[in-house]
Amino acid sequence: MTTLHVPLAERSYDVHLARLTAEEVAEKIASVLGKPSGVAVLVDEHVAQVSPRFSPLLAAFEARLPRVRHLLLPRGESAKNFVSVERTCEWLAQNGFDRGATVIGVGGGAATDHAGFVAAIYLRGVAFALCPTTLLAVVDASVGGKTGVDIPAGKNLVGAFYQPRIVVADLGFFDTLPKREIAAGMAEVVKAGLIADADLFAELEADADKVLSPASLAAAIAAAVEVKVSVVSEDEREGGRRAILNFGHTVGHAIEAASGYELLHGEAVSLGMIAALALGEARGVTTPGLRNRAQAVLARLSLPVDVKPRLSAEVLARIEVDKKRRSDTMRFVFVSSPGQAVLHDVGLDDLKRQILDAI
Image 1: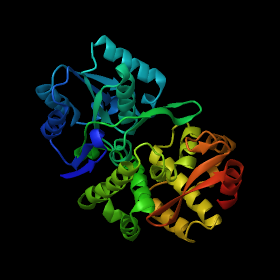
Image 2: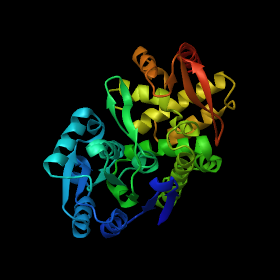
Image 3: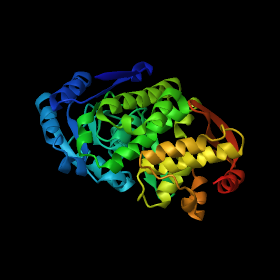
Image 4: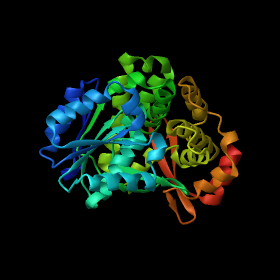
């Protein structure tokens, strides 16, 4: 088992990564939660239906924790809206969950975002733990305390910084993941290499197929999570360096939302990273040729890399409502060379024009 500690003073917690039994997952979580007054398990309905690992996990929770109830969340991004959040909060209230209760989120990034946001706002905050079940959720959404939902104007525009008590990732859940979901998660692994781990990017560049093998994937996941833990520990609320974790997300989120969430998050981030690298090369920030190198890695991982057809007027308009906007400028994340991310303020008009010119 790989265990990474997220040192945030009284909000510190551990992230556990391994192929685990249901009993091991439940024991880890129960040991941290103490004696909650009740436990609300919020699970992606698709995970509950297709994964043979969920029913044993729920039974293991019931054997170790008091008054366990579970609620099925809408699949994927459908869980990340106010209608779904209100439904969950109403269910919590109707089932008598008080401030001593704990929420456990089980599922992909949308489910863990939903669970964390609900925990942050229900009764002004209750404890929560996470069991991410997708590669994307393990390396990105479940670590760092960013929770949130989407609104029509854009993705993740409403949310809170709220840290879990523990994250336990049973990599056995990956057994039933479609290849497309694995590929989407790998986009965030590539991102981690580009922004802060040159060795990880070099490994992906040398042999991306080998990294996807069971023997190597766990190590790549751990390396990507370690990047996020390091950055979050330094800057919990994104006042400075944590913004580098948004590499590829300014354009990526706009593309994702404009697609009606037809694209998976990792697929949109793949396109966003290509756009950011192209813009970086055009502005003289990024080492010439890095865009092509990254594009080759992403393509070998079965991720989309053709950005130009996606740069519609709607996408360019959605860039303006990105969370990193400050008045008429955007705090944009560039990668100068593998492992080195830098932040530059770019005027919005210049940003949109230069992206179109660079692609």
